[in-house]
Amino acid sequence: MLPPLSPAEASGIAEHREQLAVRHQAAAEQLREMAQRAMEQFDSASEGAQTMLDEWATLRDSASRTTGEDACFAALTGELLDVERRLRRQWDTLARMLREAAHHEASAQILRTGHYHE
Image (cartoon, rainbow, N blue to C red; front, side, top):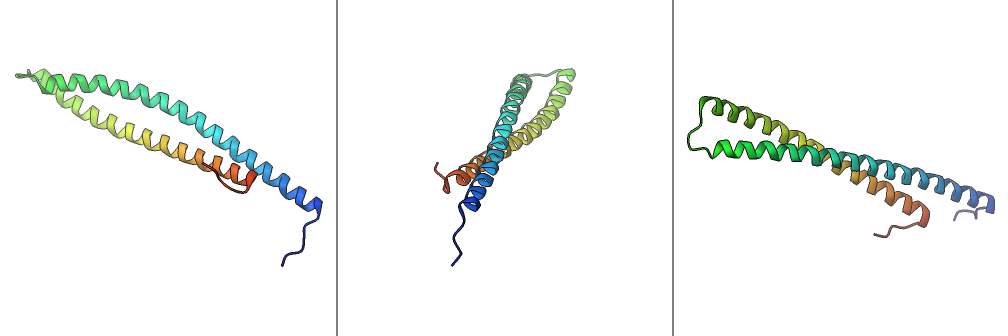
């Protein structure tokens, strides 16, 4: 059995836990702000990709494309594949930031209350 803590020791532990909780909460807020900016960039890039995709679909569905249109279609196909990869990376990064923020928030709550409530 452990010896009981003095009031000063208990107070010091509580203060240290609160300091850690504050750091976790600050990290969570920073990550959520970064995620918000990343989402705005993702939305903008998605809109640009949709415009390209619309142009690509028009060329794809064209009954008879000119040589220039064939070249444009091929170039758009390559560009769309690149955009898709970039959007996937952005989405993965966004999801990672939000997961990390949730972990920090849970840590702060556990440090403050001793348990986690969803």
